[in-house]
Length: 171
Length: 100
Image (tube, rainbow over all chains, first blue to last red; front, side):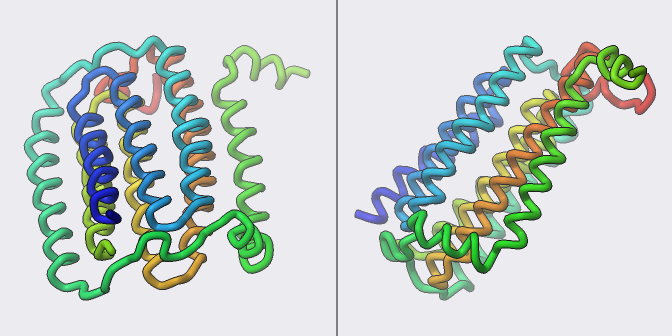
C-alpha cells in the first residue's frame, strides 16, 4: 500500500518535473510545478510529516506559486524564444541530467543499505514541530524573521517604479 | 515499507530536473521556477532522512528552507520586474550587460 502510494505520487512528481522542462510557455511550466508540489505534499504525508505537508500546500503551492503566476500575467510573458546558445546547453544539460540521475540512483540503490521507512514513521504534527521550533531552534527562527523583513523591504524597493524611489529621495 | 533509497532517488531526480531547466531554459521566470524545483527536491530528502533517523530536526529545517525560498521568490520576482521594466524582455540571452 505504502509503495503503491509512493509510486503514484512519485509518478506525478516526475511527470510534472519533465513537463516543466518540455513546456515553452511559462504559465504551463508554473502549473506543472504546482503539480510537482502537490505530489510532494502527498509524499510528505506518507512520511508522517503532516505539518510540512500542510505548509508545502499553503506556502509553496499557494503563496509562492501565486506570486509566480501573478508576475507571469503582469509581465505578459509569451512563448519562450529559442536562441542559438540554448542548443549547447541542451546538448550538455540533458546528457548531464541523465548521467547524474543514473549515477545518483546507482550509488543510492547499491551502496546505501539504509533500510526502509514505514508509513507515518515519524509523527511531525504541528504541536511537536512548534515546540522544537520555539525551543531548540529559537535563534534561527528569530533570524529568519529578520531575513523576511529584509526581503519585504528589498522587494518593495526593487519593484517600485524608479521615479517613486527618486521622489522618496528628494523628501 | 518503502526503502529510503527510493525517496532519495526521487529527490535526486527532481534536483537534476531543476538543474537541467536552469541550463536549458531561456525565460527568466522559468529559470527561477527551476530553482524552486531544486529546493523541493532537497526538501524531500530532508523529510525522508528525518523519518529514517527519527529526528524532527529535519522537518524543522524544511520549514527554514521554505522561509528562505519565500524570501528568495519575493526578491527574485521583484528583480525580474525591474529587469523587464528596463529591458522590455524576459529572454535571458538579451540580458547580458550590467549597464543599460
